[in-house]
Length: 77
Image 1 (tube, rainbow, N blue to C red):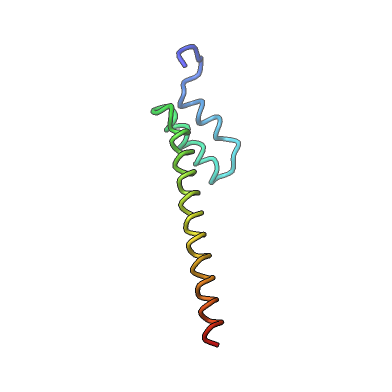
Image 2: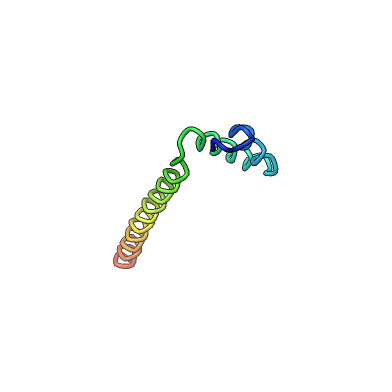
C-alpha cells in the first residue's frame, strides 16, 4: 500500500464507478471498510456463511413442521 501512487480512497472511488447504482454504493462502502480493516471481506464472508447456515436450519425446521401438519391433517380426515 505504501508504494501506490494513487491514494486508497481515490482508488476505491474509481473502482466503484463502472457499476450501476446499488452495486456501486456497495462497492464503495466495502472499499472504505477495507481501507480501515483489511479483514473486512473475510468477516463479511463468515457473516454471510453463518446466515446461510441459520436459514438452512430454519428451512429444515419448517419442512419438519410442514410434514407434521400434513400427517396430522391426513389422520383427522
